[in-house]
Length: 383
Image (cartoon, rainbow, N blue to C red; front, side):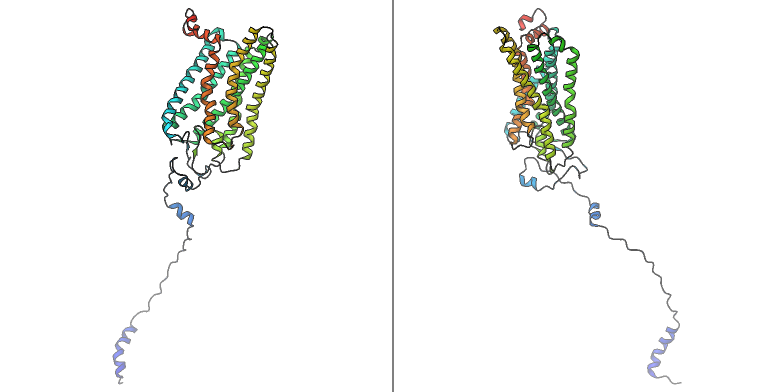
């Protein structure tokens, strides 16, 4: 058979193709495609660089540019920065020296009062017993406030942990409450001594004195503990610059980004209970004392009775006139600088003046100082 020329050319290729085996079909293994991850999980896997807080002297635009940070969504505690006297940076060394001198005088004066009323047998009356308790409260007050104030002035911008800030606030509120109650007990003691002299020894027994002192020390702890825990349960927003030299209710409330009306009402109620009510009792006691003194026939008796009350009355006016203003309206529209000056009067100045007021006007304290420090023969020289 004769093949056409076209078939002759492609025939070898057809024979070769017939010899090729058909390909074996391949089976593909299919695996499920993983679901795409969410954007939040992808962002969480990327390491983030922590944002640093600008210093306290940074402009307000830099502070406002920071994202709001709260103590509820932050796993790491953010420190507070006390900005006490930041408006007068050039006066900080001089203020630190002044407050250091005041702190040392406070420690020395109150320690002397505690030593004299504990060692001298002539100062064992209830009046000096409560004076010793007041001196101990002033020592605790100064040791809580003054060291932090000196650190703020000498090392500005140094942070305070929320725990340390809460502890300082707890001690400040406890000392304020104890001092208010002690001043009330001391006024009542003077009322009994002047208006009820025949029954004074029977009423003011040593057992009652120790019970009243323990009540004054312990009564301030529950109030301070409740207010401190309540305040630090609020979220604190933005930079943690506290425009004060200590952790107190008023400056910390300005950093809270929540509704604090119930808390402010509770602070006002506690202030009325702890500060205003004792002040009313003190005023009533001194009104009755004044009426009894004016009825005394002798001028020397009136002078002696008034001299024993004058020192206590000066301390009451200094303390209540400043502490009541600060704590009665914690979120009032006072400037932070004015609040710092008012707070200095009852946290630094009053503890320093108390030993001087009670000792310089009291001949018994001067005589006891001579007996204890100079010996029995040198007491006249020390007086």
